[in-house]
Image (cartoon, rainbow, N blue to C red):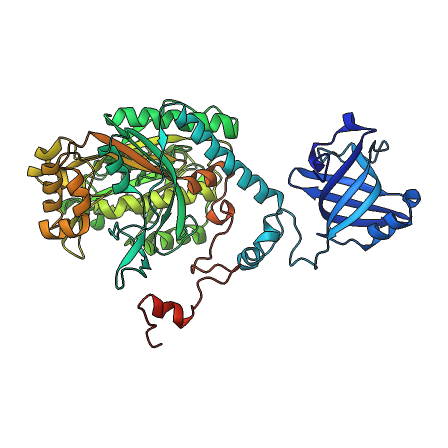
Length: 586
């Protein structure tokens, strides 16, 4: 080994030891004839002192090095003089009195300083990712990610799971997003697809008797990017045979309790609440439930049953809803801020947003104040739990318009007003999802998860109203972010055919898209269920970041470009010719 120790491991107990260190020059300072170097490696930073008596060769080398030079340092660990310690560093009580300074490789002036919190645009960070990765924040993120994956292996291996790799080159079986296609040289005119998930393959593994499967799988989706989404992602993919829904929930709940203990050092609250989908929408306006704060949505139709307000009367008469929630201590908001909230609601599709500030003694402040009877004022405060000084926001419209908009405003206001406590981890399961969702553009029913989910009640449940069918599906949500999604799968060919029929998938189309899969299910498939869990999103939550680029080594921009390599790029026409392809005219 070139070095005897890592920079960040040295302490006062090492005083007097001869050490050899290697790393990057973080800072260089000249104080008269003394040169100070801050040496950084993956473990941390330590101060190196080059004294005038170190020798001409050592002094010359020390005077040559600049920021981000890669160097080898030899010397003796010494305790710092009283008053010169640096309490900001774990190594702040000691320094290295250098007797050797060797430049392993020089560095050009880096495009930005290797420090956390440096203001640099994302494209520059990604173009010079190798510089960005030297920052302690990125080092910590990637090392924690590796630990999370290692602990997943440990937990599942101990419970009888077998890790199995599934193909990256597979058949195109559209699952919602567009596929990435790979042309075949050997089968001209035919294409592989990169998997959006190993969904069908892991179910085939259950048919093959694997019983307990998992893998850390790479998945690819050609979809629009956003802060928590990349073209490729990593997921924990898992499937189990001979299980019911509760078996899967118990296993995964145990996994996340274990991960937070091992990787965050926190014992999270357990058991995780199980919230039916309909209840989640009613209470929070979304199935991405954040339980760290209150502000639950309240039904206000009864409060305004005798209202004189025309809009409220017409909405109730047409079968719509009036709903609202109270924002603690937000009565201080000025009219400009309230107008901004109204615009935020209207940008999401609201026709308007009503607000009422609750004052003491039954008084309110609102454009609607003169239309609110004392009974309605009291009822509004009681239904929403509003106290004097609170702000109540209300909407009146169809439920499928009101709920998501109020849910989004609830989360927006909680963030803006600092209502999310630091270090709070609130897991919950969302269960009993609708099986179908109506697609108005194509005038057909779509599966809310995927077409291989078992309906609650089996095939008989499909004989009635599609809107009433519930799915044996479940999502795990943490602090408003979905971490995993899963379901008990269909293992009966007759039930699968009924689902395809309800979705408008003809037998011919089903055979074309899923024939190999349906063929396997003619040979005694076991009851089974599983999940797909986004590792990137787990890491975002653990590290408290809202951008997936902070937890991935080599991410792409929101336009799908890799600034580091320049991908995607044009390719040589000869390569296309070999594949039987030619570029379209621009």
